[in-house]
Amino acid sequence: MEIERRHRPDPEEFYQEFAKPGKPVILTGLAEDWPARGWTPAELARRQPGLEVVLTPSAGAHRDKVTMTLQDYVAYLAAPDERMLYLASWSFQDSLPELLDDFTVPPHFADDWLALLPAELRYELMWIFMGPAGSGFKMHQDVGMTSAWNVQLSGSKEWVFFPPEDTPYLYGGEVDAFNPDHKKFPRYAQATPWTATVRPGELMFTPSAWWHQTRHLETGVALTANYVDRSNHKQVLEWLEEVGNQRPLKRALAKIASQRLLAAARGKS
Image 1: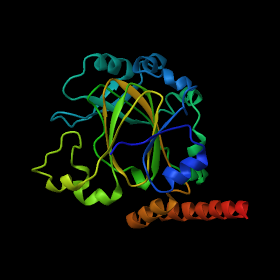
Image 2 (image 1 turned 30 degrees about the horizontal axis):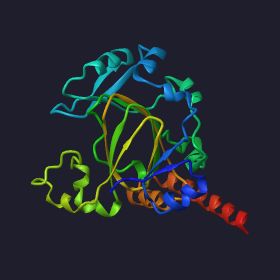
Image 3 (image 1 turned 60 degrees about the vertical axis):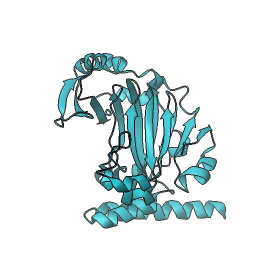
């Protein structure tokens, strides 16, 4: 199934048609004026060439992570080896805080309840991803059953999604959706993939609990953030209850949810 594209829907339209029912969508026209559209590996390395980053192999038999400077990683991207080293989940805010001035969170995702948590319970869930053609992120569900937005800033990327009800067919994310081993994972044939190619400037919305996998078609950079709001707080709170060791966070988030939902109800009355 091909994922729908929607050009600049208003936030409530997006909520009703995609966020609330939990349906992936590509949003266009939301990042047209971002200076971040100029983020390429070379541009990021120019800002701080000696900054060390941790890279993850995304192909081949190698699994050991590698540390390089951004400058050396740019050189690697010009001639990547079989490891397809991938810069995944780079928390850039401390090392390159000026990058925060290069974009504005779209209003569709601005009501992030995580930002309302006490500082000691708050998690930073915004990252840069960067890699060569052929690299990518293995099949997974996003952290804590949060939802996410991901803007492709340079290069193009393939996405494959699976709804939560396909979980029994995905073997805990061990399946490679781009090259599935049907003998090893026979139940995978019952899964229903949702597919898309995201181009520069486009935003991919990942609903809570959806499995997904990515693969770069060319060298590229993306910005992503995970969040909690009225569309997914129930799933997040259920996950926190299941893990059982995050009770202060669960209590704080439940309180925020109650306050936000009450305020919304009063606003409608």
